[in-house]
Image (cartoon, rainbow, N blue to C red; front, side, top):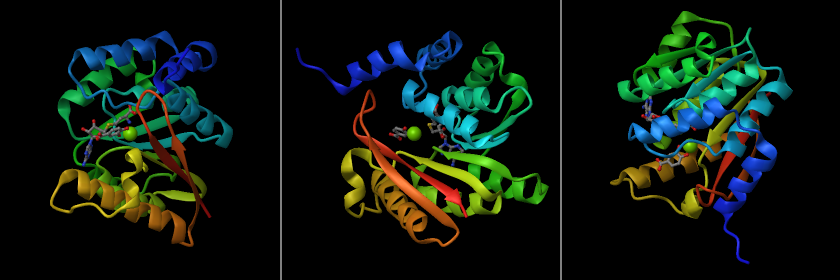
Length: 224
Ligand code: SAH
Ligand code: DHB
Ligand code: MG
């Protein structure tokens, strides 16, 4: 009679989340293409959609596309008149995402910007476009402090900023070894949480999660 967090994720996905078939197919296609299996869970994806809907966001920025799974939920939330700009530096990931988003009927509302996200964010600033209403940050964790500070330049009062993977099995508790990728990721996470907690322009919270992806968490902030 035991139960595992991953099994509960499956149960909730089947009974509550109502994941569109096209998103499940896109996830399977990304896995089949050999992309890393690190997309948000169905329940987290649906939460992203509901945050977009609840906030009335029409312009969404995502950092870290992978195969477009979280992108699908975000694009779902903004509706046919909304828009998602998503940043990805792996051509192969962007190609899988493009194919999946088109197959889900969401391609028209998503712009995949290929390149290092730091460069794309700088380009977006130069383009001086309308502010984004919601930003989902889910790429290289080392750059998270930069991504949040740059998001503040690309949003408005009332915009939402979400940062994925801020717990990572508790590794956030201790400074990381800066000579390793994992340690730098930990340090980027600790630093971004400091910013979220102390920058007067932000009001934030952070929550732990468990499920198919293990023990992790996300942070959510509103721009004052
Ligand atoms: N948001 C996705 C998962 C993203 S995984 C989902 O939940 O479905 C992280 C992605 O960020 C990977 O595809 C990786 O190639 C990309 N990435 C990592 N570092 C990056 C960088 N500096 N610039 C742009 N993309 C980056
Ligand atoms: C990793 C990255 C993610 O964005 C995620 O959700 C889970 C794991 C990783 O790099 O291991
Ligand atoms: Mg993530």
